[in-house]
Length: 396
Ligand SMILES: *Cc1c(COP(=O)(O)O)cnc(C)c1O
Image (cartoon, rainbow, N blue to C red; front, top):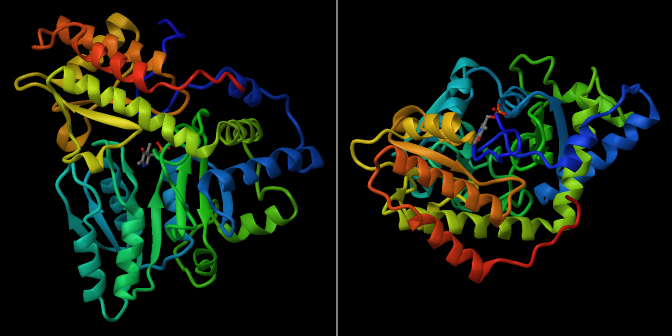
């Protein structure tokens, strides 16, 4: 295994050296002022990345999935109705978690490759005159299909329906990489994880809460202990945790959010958009297409590539790992085998991306796919040459 090859899975992402060093810390007392000096900047940095001024940040030793659980158990009660559209593996898993928590999930079935169906969401909210729906769940970036949904549009649907439901957004594979505006979009809970846009190892669930979401914690009766916002709030007031925090990861988070802010959050979004567009040009060069149904749905952090008729995307992922020491993502659930996924988020440059595209191309040639060597790489090169920014070597 050649550990210097970048990974092209949609999380965990490549960890910049400076962040790895920040995570590598001697033990320190998490009840000391030294811990507060790490934790404070981490929370402040996350607020900037989430584009929130009024939101409250909570960070659990967990992963994105734990963030989902924290969001629902702190704000809802058994039997509550939530509204969610299912259009991929991650939206499906969030629905499944709600059902296992005895919530009544009103599901809008949506073809994989499409995003949150705004008109149907608005119709469902308008039809709910009694306001039984307590929360609307949106997977901002469906990592299984490479589809971005219009969160601002879901907020507009809530407004148009005059509906008071909370708006919960899974931003695990978008926050810190793609446009995300917690306050402007009226997001009540935003969920992220450490190992995607934040470029850290897995191990943190990162949440942003609106005042309205925070207010729900007192009436919510779903059981929770480890994830109880009330305990966190009490301990945060004293600069600490109700239990042992992941100190090294939090120090890494302070570093990574500073790196994102130094580059400029909007510049980070633009970099992801540019790199993603090069990937899309390459895919077109191969004569293939993304799983996302229309260009407005194209994700800038992950592309699921529909494989040629009769071929299997999982074969490509296996070959890339075994022959070239490079990681791509397999298709999940309904699209298993039918796609392979190229992750293009986190710490990534045009040059790194070209290496991934070149290896994907070699694998296709090895597997006898009808793709000419160079066809995709040249299309991406052409795009990056004309649209690349001068390299800024600020932090890394
Ligand atoms: C990765 C991912 C998750 C799961 O996060 P974990 O950190 O693996 O628990 C949830 N939602 C989306 C959209 C993801 O990409």
